[in-house]
Length: 361
Image 1 (tube, rainbow, N blue to C red):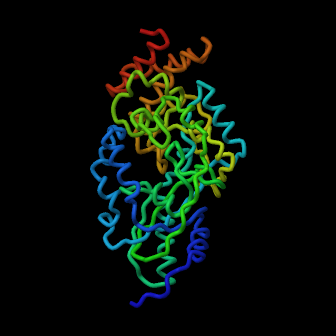
Image 2 (image 1 turned 90 degrees about the vertical axis):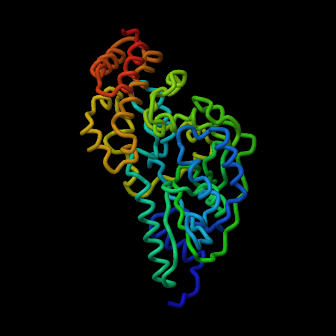
């Protein structure tokens, strides 16, 4: 089939917007400028147990190995910030309440991976309807792709000192998706950086994981510790986790650009099961079956019930240091004692640590 004229930027922007994407840009599939930085980061061991990052580093650095024949990437963004204009203040209030669990804002609703990929497939279908068949593959945090670097090249923002992409109109509360394609589309221009001398993200990080501007030690990052780490959380970091049971948003909450964060359209990312304001003890009581049923369709499901309990046990232990002795502490102790003999050795270890924080044998 002969190919029709390539779609224009205006066409792509309209089609992407009709699918709910709030940003769309084009990048050439050349990430050589960032490749050495990735290799240095891996050589420093900053990826921890995320061995897949090292195993597939060549595919990240040379996109054509991943999708032969691809020459361009259509990059999209999808906002997920809560609809409440005071969401940042509400998030800080949640973090300040040691009885309540804190879940990263991106994970409160539906799992973004499949949602973004499905919309990218529809975008590809819309392009094919206009120009004929073409080669493509859709990604959303699901394969060895340098999404932030490609989105930066596509003009969707600049890399902030916390390593996330920042945009002057949307802050950093958006997901990124990539459509690798064999279409020779003209690339967009990157935007200038606007972090200046600001260091708020570095200074607010609870564990000091942002070891230098633009450099993250994932082994200290709470998102890594509560999501990616399969085993025990290092004892020296447990107290620093506070009540964060899935991910961490502190660097984003402190970022001045997130005053412009755009609320998510629709209900896809609205909080489910009260996860934005639920007490730790209540979540700790969930059985494996309850966890599976309530977290179906959520990004949280990937950590499984065992890590869920591990994380909450740490948060319940941390309550001892910040809560006034009384009913709250008693509820925490009762909840922990109920799982003191949990079938999982890892859960038992963290429960016994937490009980010791409360002065319990």
